[in-house]
Image 1 (tube, rainbow, N blue to C red):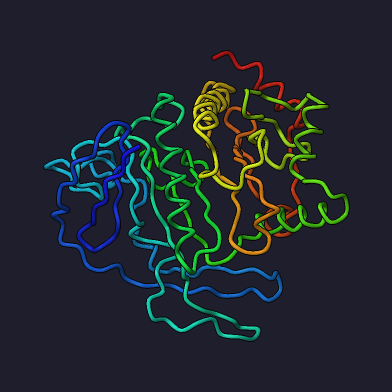
Image 2: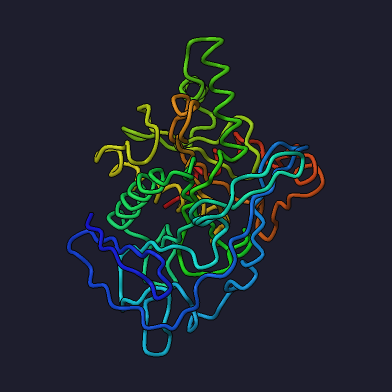
Length: 357
């Protein structure tokens, strides 16, 4: 992997990732205003977590046409966020971030109405310069380059003093909430450990204190022993539908070795993962003969005392439960956080295994 660093017209960072040679970095010729708004973090005293209030994001693109896509390479008729006429993988700072450099903003206020700057980092990663591609369409070598880029960004973001947790993820499909169709993902550097990640870490800590064992390792061993929810296995990875899956189609992908984050994967594990991730997404898309909406996100180790209890894993979820039918997060899920799944996890795993590639 070769990284070429550049800057956009408003000062944001941009990084070209190439598998073979340094990338040419043309100048961003746009006349851009500095990013507006910084937003703020507000503490929800009842739920005990943080909410980013970022009103400046209302101006971001919403399902632009192919001719106006901001993530395509720059052409004479469409000057975009990526000045180059072609690329393999690109990462750049989001123009409308949920979190950003707080500068000289004051710290967090105390009390029931605690608030502070939404310190953090939001980056966009473009997987391909082909507007009509999907992650599952990428060849194995390109997926490996994406993994290398995400590992590099994980290390870089964890070096930022106010970032505590790094979350790389992809939203795929308008049904899941995508606002730009070009194949891309994001990397969030949170100033806190997000609620779901924190819950898993605290459960792992309690499990270790009670048993002396690793919780994720015990879950993997239990799934392998049962076998009914395992979707695929390789030399270095295991993919299964969780026993208590929340979504109609819900997979977790775990390395067999204990790894804290993407940067800790060795070459063999990254090569193996590139093949497996492509297979799993193709199985997902093959379920009903239509491209499935999904979210794919990496759980990684945060900074701080709970870091030792973390274990890297990928989670892939889809809200499509049948052809033409979506699972909507209604009263029980949205209001109370109590999930109801319409498909037995064992049936979902069987359906995924039976997809012919």
